[in-house]
Image (cartoon, rainbow, N blue to C red; front, side, top):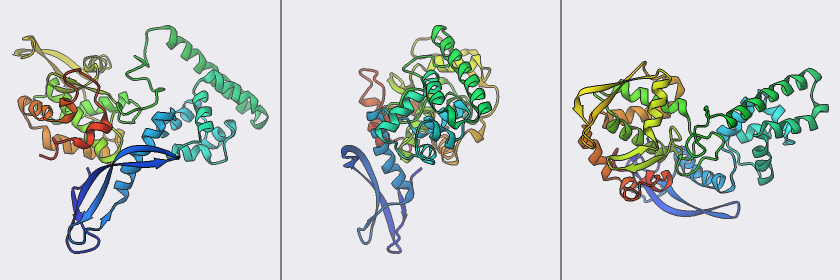
Amino acid sequence: MIARQIESPFTDGYALLHEEAVTEKFRKEEFSLIYHHYVCQVTGQSFTTDELDNLNVNQVYSQYRQKHQIMFPEQISQLRDRYGLSAARMSLLLDFGPNQYRSYEDGEIPSDSNAAHLRLARNPRTFREMVRAKKDKLRPNELAKLEEHLLVLIQQDEENFFTSEQPFLSPTLLNPRAIPDEYTGYTVPNQKKFAEMVLYFFSSCEHLYLVRLNKLLFYADFSHYRATGRSLSGYRYQAAPYGPVPERYEMHFGLLVDEGLLIRSIDPVRKNSFNGQPLTNYTPFRTARQEVFTAAEWATLETVCHQLGHKSREAIVQLSHEEPAWLDNVQTHNLISYQQHAFQLKGLDS
């Protein structure tokens, strides 16, 4: 979480966090962002920290990537992992500079032409043609092994296309090939991380049912975006009668039951006040694995749990109903934009 107040580097006093809507240019295009900086209370001088610089830059870079359909760093890294190649080998096969692929994984934005090349390479059939065009640069056994691996991937893609099985579920929900956008918090939807978030809250909060859980997930994702310019899970949220919820959350929790991560039962006593039906109860099969998260992500979960995990169902629903994210979208049940609403988040500041 970003500190709202820190010691000033100019005096013995303090500096307060300021947020303002501005427009910045990147590659000759203008993008709107919420610019974050500290202002010394004594001298009035403005300054930023590395944390704020990353947040400000991420907002611009993410919008540029979305607009031009440029893969995000984690997608570029996942592509290399899928083909089982080093960054140097990927640069060679894609006609990039020697260290270019690694720099894209580290966050550098590709040129438009290289971005287009990366998009084409996501199709194993197309990538196989790229490999064959560079066969003179590869050792015979290396080429044979890569060809064999690509054939398996091609067959898997065809099977997934012609059957109803996962992994993609829906082109709009959890398609890892889709370019992240303002509704995913500019993060590739991550089923594994979402599952661990759910396990964390079920294990850390007493008497937790879906209404409270959905609010905790919302605050975790949106507060992490407010601090970093990226959501935790990459999941989309929409405004429902009882506050923000993950899009098609019942399906997602059903998948966790199918995977054996949650145990589902019916509460014989408590009733759903919305439809009068018995409440569905979920029990975690295990605790969350902390290693799935970065230190900052884990800190976000702990902060949300500490500040909101003890609140009653009615209290956390009321809190979420005061959020512009809910107020601006409840009439239409629209998806909630992280960029538009995360910086207006109120629940963790009260």
